[in-house]
Each structure stands twice: as structure tokens, then as C-alpha cells.
Image 1 (spheres, rainbow, N blue to C red):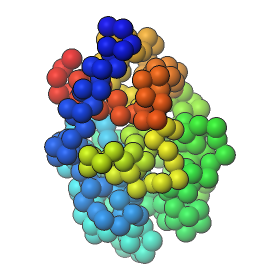
Image 2: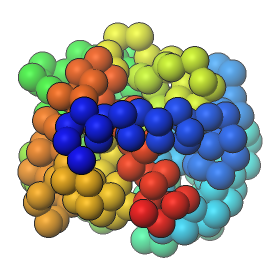
Image 3: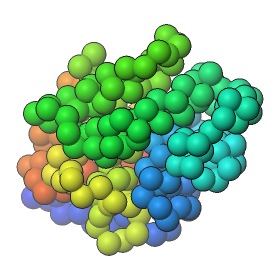
Image 4: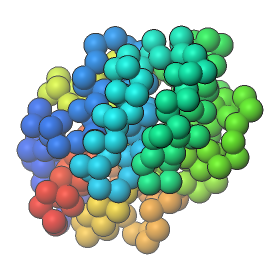
Length: 253
């Protein structure tokens, strides 16, 4: 397949998978439960943080997390008591546990009280690209006292990570394509700045299609894939995440 044929094939797959029905089987359904901007972004951030492993388990545990936050994540972040935090100790998703969740709530409170919220931290970063902004975000996130064990739950592209979960969260917040999948509530960033959430599925499909040569799913692979996808659509390169993920998960391409 030459590049034109490949683009045509992928564009068709984007239309096929980037549909409202996608929401029902994807963790993006969690932030879709909310109307207030801060609720949506906090629910999205916490859900994306635990988005590894079995998708059903991710969705179930994300819903449990929302229940623990009284189904009002922003209100909980801003107004929780020590007793409220105590109830979070029971939470566990794989290696992310109650200790991590409690710190995440404290750090989010710091971000909303002192930095103008999640969108502002990413939008105000002095970085040249969003991958560097993610590294700056991590510095802000862990700028208050924290358990060392929790650092591993926020990726750092400057340390070679493809930062799949944060890139997915950013796609949810920034893309708005009127199909009702991505939420598109952040207006200070542009879809053209986004990077594909590179995981096992999208990486394998990208290699089979010749979009990606690098074997590891790391920051260098992400840059390679980004460069190729921007040739196909510089304004909305991560729409192809739907094609790559859909081909990998739903079609076992």
C-alpha cells in the first residue's frame, strides 16, 4: 500500500470506529458520566491513570473510584476531610492502590487551588511540544510531599516513556470531532499538538502497516509514529488512534 492508499484505508477505519457505540466498551465512558468541566477532567485523569490491563476491569474499577469520590470528583478533591481520604485506602487496581489514590487527590487539590486546574498546567507549560509538557506536568504533580512509590503512576516522556495513558487523557480532553466520543472540553490546546496513545495494539498494527519500524513502544517510537501520522493529517493526527486501536482490538488485524 502506498501512502495515499494507506490514508484512504485508515480514514475509512476512523469513520467506522470513531462512533458513539465506541464509548460503551471504552474507559472514556467514565468522564462521559459528568457534565461539569472539572468533574469530566478529574474523572478522565483518574480513569486514564489506571487504564492498563483488561478493559472491563479498568471500567469497573474506575466506576468504583467514582463511587468512593461520592460521584462528585471535583467537590471531593476540593473539600475532602481526612476521614474521606481514609475510605480510599481500600481501593486497588493492579499496582495502583489506596496510597496512590490518596496522593492523587491531594495533588489534584494543589493543582486546582494553586495552578488554575489541569488544563492550565498543560496549557501554561513552557515546553515546545506536548510530550515535554507532560514532563513539566509530572514535576508540578509531584511538587508536594509524596510517597516515592506513586511516581511510577505518572509517565515521563523525557525518561523515554511513550506516556500512553496521559496521551489518551489529552486526546479525550482536546479532540472534538462532533461524533460524541472524545469530549473536546479543553480549548487552549489544539488537536494538532496531540500524540497517539501508543500501546501494544496500536503499536503492532502500526508496524504491520509500515507506519512504525521501531520495536519498543517508547518515546522514540511515539515520535516516529507521530511524524508519519502528521503527514496523513497534520490538523488531527490522533484520529488515527481509532483506526489503529480498532484494527488491533476489534478486528485482531
